[in-house]
Image (cartoon, rainbow, N blue to C red; front, side):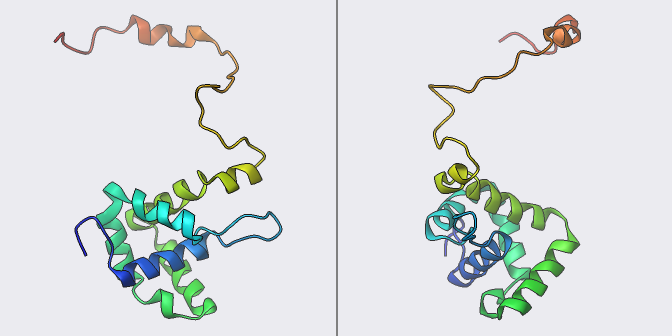
Length: 142
């Protein structure tokens, strides 16, 4: 285990949490967050949240070995406590889940990057930026 990776048991626990957070749905024909492709993205994308994810997995150690009811109860207890550890787990799992092409398509969106086609935005009231434009310079020249 390096500073950038989770131990095998932490990985198993995170995979179980991801699957409990977003289970697969036959109705909507989408995979769960524990799907191999999505979970690989989760592992690769932890980045700056690694310390908090490790702490969260320490708090949830062994959850991958529990039956469904016990695992769900333990996950709910963890989630109800709130705080930065819960936020880190939710952020890591959900950002990767909702960028998976299968999930994007199930939402009725086109699975593509925003550019070069771009997305059309409604024009707003540009005068709302006038106070910002009138603000004094807040930086120094290089």
